[in-house]
Length: 100
Image (cartoon, rainbow, N blue to C red; front, side):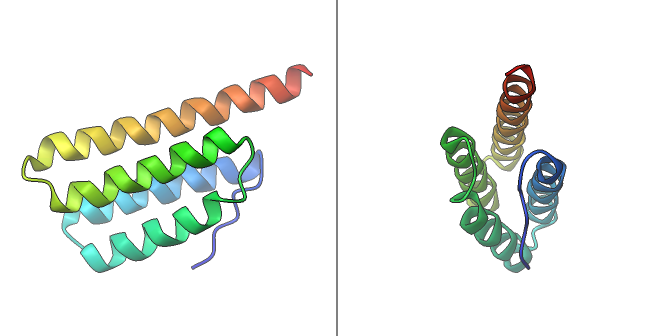
């Protein structure tokens, strides 16, 4: 599965993909979750600003960790927060670009 996260239209697709991967983790579907986070992570290397790509990879790591965490609810909450951080970064970068 290939994702296109080009700004700004792809940002919603990215957030939806991260949330879908988190749902797979929540449901215990490790194969689907790993495939999704791997694809998202690979696509993140082309993102601008670079900080957004880093946050996407961090969110993917948090989602992966939720699959293996001992405290599942806390791990899922951390992953959700990581996705929110990505969303905030993308909104800020979009606001900055439109203000320029």
